[in-house]
Image 1 (cartoon, rainbow, N blue to C red):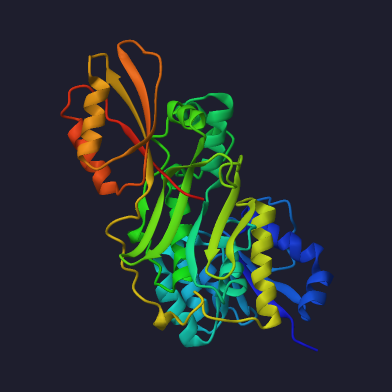
Image 2 (image 1 turned 180 degrees about the horizontal axis):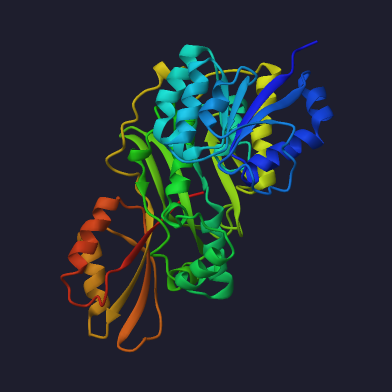
Length: 428
């Protein structure tokens, strides 16, 4: 009979406790599905006296996660501490150095140090599994690395931060401002201790960097992501976009082009009838496109104790079954440096501007756009607000550089009351 698979779990927050609970509740089912008993040898957290709603007295306790990783009775180190550096990284490195497998939900650590960790793991003959690091309960890592292994991936796209999606849909549904919804979300505990990780797009960009590496065979390159959060999205833009048939989402997009790897995490407009346009609340959605499979859509909870712990258990079960493989789908030493695309694919853009109440103002704007090579697809003008006329424009596909040239020239016309808002429209 196979020897039990012995776990050391570092981090006993909601996810860590969720893993403990699933292991206890589903012990027989997990053994039946993997052919091996899975047991917890020891745990680690900052405060051993804290009431976590689950009894932990049957497990050995280590105050130091590095000591936990080095224990002789731990085969798999489960890192649920978080943070790109510090104890989480130190403990993972300690486990890998001893040839122990690692399961982690730490997207920040992988986005910043994934390459070096992967090289160490593969040198030592061990694996790092991280299904829970991207999109919570959605099995996107396994889908890319296993189910779509026979495809050349052409594009990865999705809503990867449930807190931001909640805020944007709440603004639209309730007609609230960004500041009002931010305060509400923070009060409900939907935002990280550092809210900028959510609203600034950093959390979602960590996930995009990992997916890009898997999809395109490149080294993780978080620094190459064009990053913009949702702080500047106004209720006026959400309302105007809806009037034009679009929804605004914090959208991650990665695509390999002839110019290099294009990676963007920024607010974009998507058609309201598309799967992404219909996504509500804190749910995540990942769209994968391959040359053989076409387009597939994965939708589900992107966070929470149950979904994330479920993803952690899927990785533990893989190890118990003996399922192994390169960390990022290919040998780490074979991954290519990701050359960031210096220019982005042409796209249609949404423009919102307030024109001064002057004769010929709209004609001047149209002339500036035309001189920059920006063609207008649709335009709407609304009733005057004070002495300004709100105008919406949807362009035909253009390069961002042409648009920036037009916006710079527009500032010299003396007919635009404030800087125009420009948002990319993504085809889905």
